[in-house]
Image (tube, rainbow, N blue to C red; front, side, top):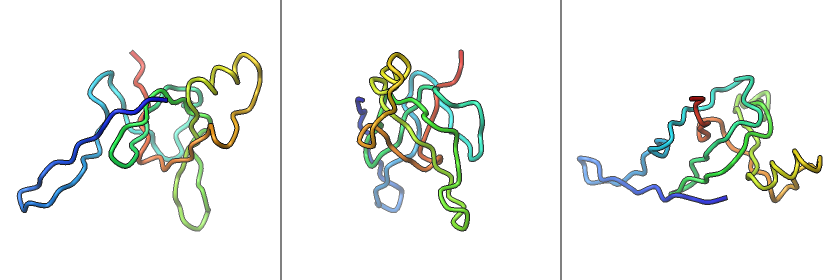
Length: 110
């Protein structure tokens, strides 16, 4: 897994913020709560002040807790994904990332 820095920007009032927008190339789109058919798709994750790249979607989006209505998705790095495909191994806990769908972008089909 590799990362790409996200840089803070200065607002008109002088405060700083880190914009939530996908990396410029290739084209990514937000994953949606309850979206189906995204299993195995390449993804990126907005994390703190950087983008985590070279991820794959491990699960369809699901509600973490029924009462909180927070949609999450599980991701793994490309290495764990390909090991799972070739060897049938399940990615270990340290190879998985559980993230809110609002922070996950998937590669658009071309």
